[in-house]
Length: 177
Image (spheres, one colour):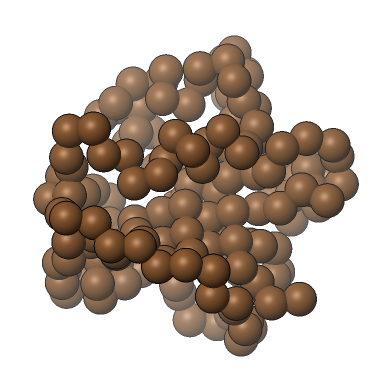
C-alpha cells in the first residue's frame, strides 16, 4: 500500500510560515548544492497533494515547473474549481476520499507538501504515514503552526535524525502501527 509522507520545514518553535504566509525564513538555510535530501525523497513519490495557498506561493516565487514537471500527478486542494493544467488537478472534493482512493491504487508514495490545513486534516484522520521535518534554527514567535490543536494523539517511531552545517536538523519518524 502507498504511504503518505510529509516533507516540510518548520521553525524551532513550530511555525511553517510567518504571518501573511511568508516563507522567507527558509532562505536562512539555503546553501549551494544542498537540497536536504529533497531530490532523493521526490524520487520515491509520483503523486503530490498540496493546499492552494501553498501552491500559489510556490508558483509565484519559484514557478509552476516546480510542481508541473510531467513526473507526477499534483492535486491542489481548493474550494474553487479551476481547469486542469498538465498533470495538475485542482481538487474540490473530500480530501479524505481522495487520499483513501490514492492509497488504494498502485504507484509510488504520495507527498503532502502542506499547507497546515491539509496536513492537519490528514492528521485528524490518521492518514500521514511518514514525517520528515526539517527544523530551521529560528524562533519565529508567530505565524502558521505546523501542528494545530484538536488532533488525536499519535505515537511515532524514530527513524533518523540528521544535522547539517547550516544548523538545520532533519527529523524522520514513521507512524507506529
